[in-house]
Length: 508
Image (tube, rainbow, N blue to C red):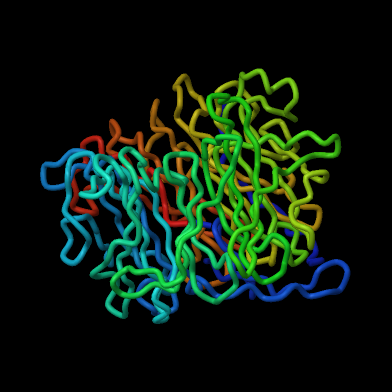
């Protein structure tokens, strides 16, 4: 069903997350959180260490920047070598005129572009060397290594600086053949031991959680050592995020995964950050002692503005046996799990789908609502909002056209109240909706003009026969608006369009 054009909605009175966006004093992103707010009991949780430069500001000009992944793109004739495109922020927002395209053929970047490397399989950002500039962290999941063999995978950094991104170093290789380190959704960054330095958290071989502890040197070396976090359930990780869920000033890690070959057995796991690194994982459970159903995407941010980062999980799949036990699964759904001094409170989890009041569209099998969660304050009211894709949305006789919905945060957490949606058929949006565009496969919220309200960025990797494109939507005090929206693709970037799938992911 069609998502209607974005409509204004009223702000509720103020009573009051990778994978950072400035929003009235709260630093928010789907992968990290700094929280100065006071909780309901009147105690102020300790401020989280600044592990990421505020705004994801690669060039240090005070405006947030954007990194867009095209891991399937052809580079110098090498198919699926991949690249990452960067747009720098300004007083007028993200600027295509200041674009930068980075691949393994870029001077100073580790190694060289090769077929199947998939540079940009995962993208993160943090100030690893503590020079005041955010650095770009890039997964290269298909990378081979001399020591490990074929497809060990690699995580590398491109250093931020006053003139933008340049140079780089290897941060971590997979240990063994086919470890495929840093696949999509399997990389996040945060200070998980509270020492003030950013730590890299990645998934190795799909089931091992690996922590590389900073601080990092300019050669990519990590002085804090490494930690492998065991899990006897043989999990298969789907997504990771970091944030201070319990308000103790140390970043925690949240992951969503399924158990080994049991694809339908999804769960949400919480690893508390401690001075020694990550504690043993705890599965989030509901009031009946059953585990809260996980999904494919997870984000972290203070949705209810109580000073604790909350967990937001997108479960876009439906039609499985677990639907019988899962709240409102039809067409996909988004779960809100509040944080607290004791960590996530699964007993207070609540759910939203396209049949929830005021959410655009209607829940239909295969819509994919809940695809790619992004969390930040869109309208500047101090509450983190949630953007999610609906790439399987059908309308006007076309299939998998796609759309994106922004859900409003508030005192009660996440509901459908005030939600709005956009797609390529929304008035004022450039382009035309077509089958298999899958608009909304990736979402990102970034305050590109530094006004305290995050803009919505939407990845559409199916656009133009899988060339891919990206849309940017401005924000107002009423939320996201199609007015003044823009789009860019390979033509703007000067890259190879064929099967690039630009917009497959963003920095978190």
